Image (cartoon, one colour):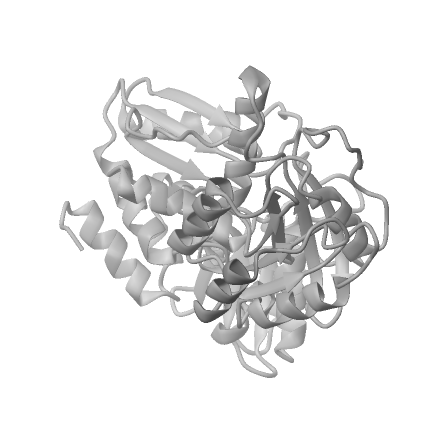
Length: 413
């Protein structure tokens, strides 16, 4: 509760060949021995993540990766994990070791540029070898940040940090708003928070906590109730609330209990624009009306958790979608960072709210689905569709509402 959530931190990936000094550099940057360091190539196998407060960037996550030149069957698997990290970082560090600049580094730089990910080139091991002046100057002429260091001797680490500051994306994810642009100072917001097995005793789920914080930052006022207390709470208010926000699982009851002239939405729908492209997710929701028995649906979670007896993603949403489609659907569930490269077998992807993911990670998933022609929506929108209230819960977002209506009618954007 006191820490910046991992999904809101700037993610910085460290990439390069085996034995280029990636792990040594990560340890030097954070001042701790987090990654194992050895002269044996291939010491880092799986990505190693470490949260850190890097002044003046603030809260970041450093990710140390396996070498891009790893070999063998296991090596190929490690390289695949490294390339997955490339898709979700906000900032990259390309580490060039004693071997000098080669095809691995140039291909990596090309990939980062293609993805629009800013990066810094770090020539490491300056205590052993001097980087080719022509290569350094060529990078600088090309407008790239280039730093020469010796991570083992802690030489040049400050320069790396400064380069990261300069290359960090402007207007980071921490500046995004969940609800603040929908309300003003003094406005009343009613939050409907059911307490179930998904919220352990003494805790609330992250989107609820983040929404409360954004309300406070907006100098607005919040009232928090459970779903069965909403009607009574609204009757006791002297003035109507500006907005009602509820958990998607109780959206049907909340829609019925909220007066038509009071706007309402769900926490998950707020997350759809905070962590992704809301318009595209609304378009994806329109595809639910075209689901047919026998279609294949992917349920994608970004966190890993024990499946509950009536789990929202693994039990409830599949059941509601089958009822809506009027027959059986083949439903696959993927959790954590496991997201298929090939989405073409699916008629629909239903993504969770992504509270533990970065915005970039969510956008990459959306981009992959769009590129393959597969509609994608999120939990909150899907639930509102099958409950028949998505048009109501998107009233706060007219553009998304229109995108959903067009897609549901079979019209192209």
